[in-house]
Each structure stands twice: as structure tokens, then as C-alpha cells.
Amino acid sequence: MRVFKFGGASVKDAASVKNVAEVLQQVGFEDVFLVVSAMGKMTNAFEKLTQAYCEQSEDRDIILNEIKQYHHKIINDLFEDNSKLVCNKVEIYFAQLESFFTENTSDNYDYIYDQLVSQAELISTTIVSKYLASSGIENTWIDVRDYVKTNTDYRDARVDWTNTEENIKRSIIKNGTLYITQGFLGRAENGHTTTLGREGSDYTAGIFAYCLNADSVSIWKDVEGVLNADPRYFKEAKLLEQISYTEAIELAFYGASVIHPKTLQPLQKKEIPLYVKSFLHPKNKGTSVSRGVHIHPEMPCFIVKKDQILLSISSLDFSFIVERNISEIFSLLHEHKMKVNLIQNSAISFSVCLEDKYQNFDTLLKELKDKFKIEYFKGVSLYTIRHFTKESITRIEKDNGVLLKQLNQETVQIVIE
Ligand code: ADP
Ligand code: ASP
Ligand code: MG
View 1 (spheres, rainbow, N blue to C red):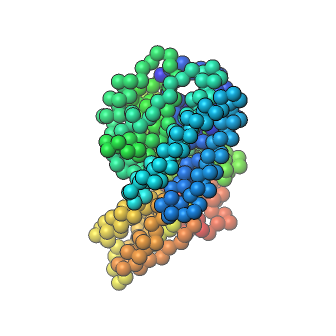
View 2: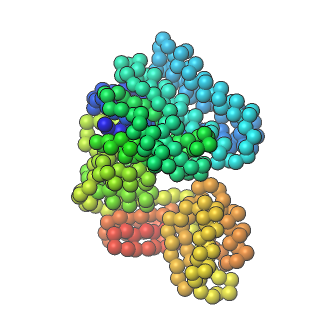
View 3: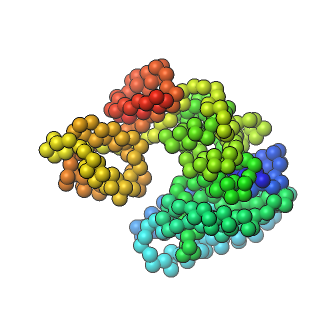
């Protein structure tokens, strides 16, 4: 079995959905397990909807209408005759959403988020499944929540591998069928929907590949494969033809957003190759991630994380920052769900480069200020260069204010103003 994953960019409008069908025609779809994300930027739109609902803002219905219109346009552009039928199916999800608005009694933001945001993948896969069927590609739509079981860490749920594997092995059978399901979602034991963290659909593909002992996973992207930099920021980014699991894990860990970091471990365990390919040129080779050659061709790889916070912490009385302080600082960072991307300490200060994913920085700051002297820079960028050379470092440092730099054998990290 082959597992394919199509992300938001590959289903962002009717032409893109048609292209998915073409890709399947070109590369074959027998014994394929297809994971599809929300359409275009719909997860962001549903995030706004969640916020508006929780803040009881009047924008709620405006945002919901925009979401509806976006999907209706795609449906109308895709289906000439039976657009009504597909619309009706999709309408069920919108109706569920609206009854959630009236019936929900919880004030747990993360729980609400998962119940609302998850609708985007349910709607998307319904449309894609119907379109594929209408263009002669028979497929079986499944609800991923019946298979992927998780704990109740809403918005960042952990997979219960034993249960998940059992469910998948019991019901997904190789018989030439094309299955289609949602990425990013799961279900907790209490029956509620959970999500696996933003960009989690690649991970879903990894989960199914692992449980199905798949032959390979292909993630279809709007780029030729894994490049040595994000082409949005580096014009002349080049294709990496072959990288090892370890290299891919490192790149994803440092923030190369083309692969979700959690995707690789299950694949590495069973040595299932991962292909990162272009949905515009499906016959091109793309990047192969597998065991063996570390990186080919070898070249410096640039990763940039924008919108970081560089936080410097020192003691109020100029005493050393020692284990006890560090452990206290870390438990505060953990409590406030801060993502720590870089750590550096000296005798009297401790610096961390942070990502404030859940807008908790101000409360964190208040608590830290009671105990420490704090300095911080908001809106800084963290550059990571794997396999760096002198020239590659100069390239980043020239014309930029360097706030912090850390070097090890293969990787240099530079925080830039
Ligand atoms: P999906 O449609 O599956 O969600 P993403 O948008 O998450 O796809 O991933 C593809 C994007 O990742 C590209 O458009 C590119 O801008 C970005 N990207 C970041 N780092 C890299 C890299 N090293 N190589 C290729 N693309 C990268
Ligand atoms: N739709 C989700 C997101 O945008 C999951 C994914 O696309 O991977 O984060
Ligand atoms: Mg994505």
C-alpha cells in the first residue's frame, strides 16, 4: 500500500482539486491510502471563527459566511449537475457547527478549537471524495477519528498507538481500494474530536503508513521536494535529491516547514521511504527520504523561523544562574506552552529563543519578573544553517544585527534583529 498526503495548497480551489485527480491518474491509485487536509487556508479561517465564537464577537457569523462561500464556490466550480447534492452533504457539517455554537457549555478554548477547526478537514475530504468519484476514481471515504485514537490534550493530542494500530489493522484492507481520509484529526476516549497540532496531516500519513506497513509515503507539495531553503525567503533554493531520516528529522526539528517533525519517526522505525514531490510535476523525482546517504547533493541548508522572542534572564542580585533557577524557568516556560528553539547560558544570564504559539508571553513575563531581571526582543528571526560554510554564515550575518549565535559541528544558529 502507498500512502499519499495532499495538503492545503493542493486543494485550495477547484482547479487544484482537479489536479489531484490528474496526479492520481498519472501515478495510479490502486491500494492507495489518501490523507487530505483542509482546503487552502481554511484552518486559519476556522481558527478565527473559534476566536470570534469564544469572544462572543459579532464577526462570528461573518467569518462563518466567508467559510461557507469559499467552499460553495469550489463545489459549484467542480460539479456541474450534482453540486446541490454535494452542498447538502457539506451543509450537514455546517449545521453541526451551528448546533455546537448553541449547545456547547464548555469554556475550554482548546477543546472548542478542536471541535470547530476539525470541520475543515471533514468538509474538504467530502468534497474531494465526491469529485474523485464523479471523475471515475472510485474511493472509500472514512472518518479518521474512528481510527486515530488520542489522549485529551486538545490542539496537541498524543496518539494512543496501540489502539490506533489495532483499529487500522482491523479495518483497512488491501484490495485495490482507494481510501480517503482527513489528516490532523483524532478522537479521544471520551468521544470528542482532537487535533494533532498545526500542520499535523503529514503526521497522519506517517501514522497510517506505520500501522499499514506501507511501501511508501508521498507528500505532494507546491515545491519540487525538500529544498536547501524555503523558496519564499531564498530565491535560489536548490533541490535535495536524497536525505536520510536523521537529516530530515533535523531539518524539520529546526523548522523546515515542508515536513512536520513528527512524521518521520514512525517511518524511520519501519524504514518506510518518504517521497516529497510536486503536485504540479508528479513524474519528477522530488526528494527521497530513506536510510542511507545523509544528504545529496551536499550543501548548506537554511532554515528561518520568524516572529521569535529572544528572552534574557538574569538573577536580581547578580548571582549565578544555576540548576535550581533553570529548572524553575523551564517549568514556567512549560506551563505557558512556550516553544523553546534555542538555549544559551552564561554565568549570570540565561537566554532562550521562544515561539509564543498560544499568546501567553505577557503572563509568563509577569511571573518571571517577580523573580528575575528580564530583557527581551520581540519579532526577531532565528536562522539555522545545517552543514554550514563560512560563506553561508556571512550571507546571513551581513546587513543584519546579530543578537546571539551558537555553533556546533554541523549546525549554526543565529538570532537576528
Ligand atoms: P501543505 O500544502 O502540505 O500544507 P506546506 O505549505 O505545509 O504544504 O509546505 C510546503 C511549503 O513549505 C512550501 O511552499 C515552502 O514555502 C515551505 N518550505 C519551508 N521550508 C522548505 C524547504 N526546505 N523545502 C521546500 N519547501 C519548504
Ligand atoms: N489543516 C491543518 C493545518 O493547516 C493540518 C494540515 O494541513 O496539516 O494545520
Ligand atoms: Mg501545511
